[in-house]
Image (tube, rainbow, N blue to C red):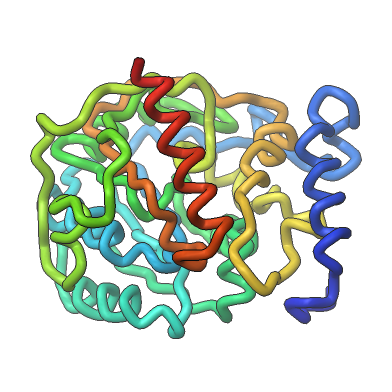
Length: 301
């Protein structure tokens, strides 16, 4: 495959994205993925499970600080966790954060920093596919770098995974903040590399009804066999700027499931108006922020 970041026109990219956004229920998923392991082929882990948690970070180092701190503050005792973060050296804030946490030895946690050219990082499914195909874990949890796995979360997950071999799982709920301005102390506190924690009273519960982008927990045998949208060219093509992450919808379509919901307490997420992965102060960045804030206020009402 040609890996030049600009080998596809932007129009072609948009058209392909549009096709796969609406392919569900119309186009047979087997055209793009025919090798999903059967139930008999999927291992059931009845002992101590191994989990790989996979995230990407570009311009979100202040939120990555909370994500990585949660493993330091609340290390798992019933599950072995590999924390994989895809990043680019051009994002110096993220690199500094990874260097800070990478020097810490945390019980039952293995750090795994994966550097990519920024054009590969900007298409999230490229890193997810790479991690899925290479994982040695029993389960792979594709998250976002702003997710906080708080006290008891990972050990509760270990108990929920006992005896299961579902294709795809997801949590029943998360707890989130309202949309925060950049000046909010909760965001500002993560600016420098340090171990930090949250005040859980600032968060409100939010139901999750399917395995959306940050809540896709995939069986390891499925991950190794299917990758992450590995046969959909548009989702494995480098790009010159961050692309909207429509591929998680295609991923559920390919696996032919919306994900089985399970109880996993202790999941928190900091919501923020400004998207660090987009260029700041542009017309489109300001428009995105306005739309996000308006939608959030409507939903809260």
